[in-house]
Image 1 (cartoon, helix red, strand yellow):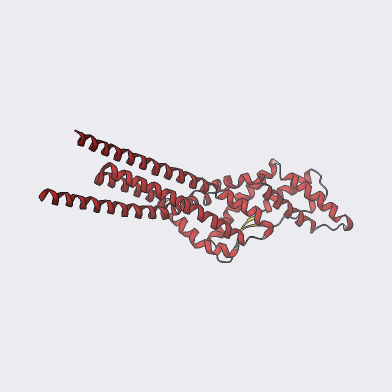
Image 2 (image 1 turned 30 degrees about the vertical axis):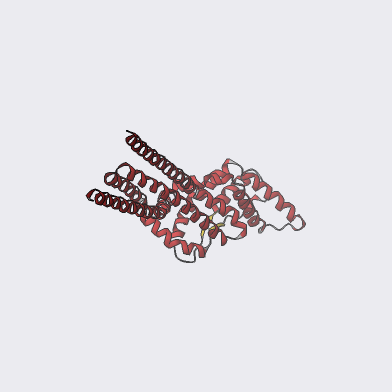
Length: 310
């Protein structure tokens, strides 16, 4: 009777422990699904959006992007032709100037002008994200236009001196959408990289406590839960990025949309890399933990079988 009672008690204790482990694993997965995207976004704001050099480095390759080149060419041509009136030759001059400016956007001088414009624009972008309601997030192309005009004039291109140098903007985020992003941006900037650090500390504590309390099997269960949380968090982050991109572009004027999409994609490239890294790490942790648990269980069952035969 005592043996049966002890076995029943042990079985109940094991069942309760298993149920508790499963509940804690579920809580950990849900917690990571929230912490992973939040940590990635706050670190992204701190390390890239708020850093001028990294911001410029992210958007610098866009000088060779066809959408950006086309938008810049159209803007400069439109602004210049407003200052020129040649009657029946208007369309001919327009085509000539458009092609000349388009050709210039493929040069190294344009790439340098694009970097200069974005270094200046970075302050305006962060100020707009910190600014008052009703203010859109834009990039001013005036430094680019100034460089284009100087180079075309020095090459003796007709009518290049008629290109006006004034504030000419590409809208990246519309005013209404920027208003909805400002509070989120402030919170992410305030949190900085600390959510990422807190997430790593949490993971070390969870796996460490599981190892001490429950041994190898509990540690592997915790590791599998961490991996599943990483995978789910990466998926949530990717969904948030897709929804945010779509909503941001909804309010951008049609003639700026392609260029705005290119800018947004360039700035979020590091986030897309983060998604894949976290996804792969999570998958490796899940698969590795499951395989190790299977190996441990198989070894235990094999040992029991041998004991029974003996």
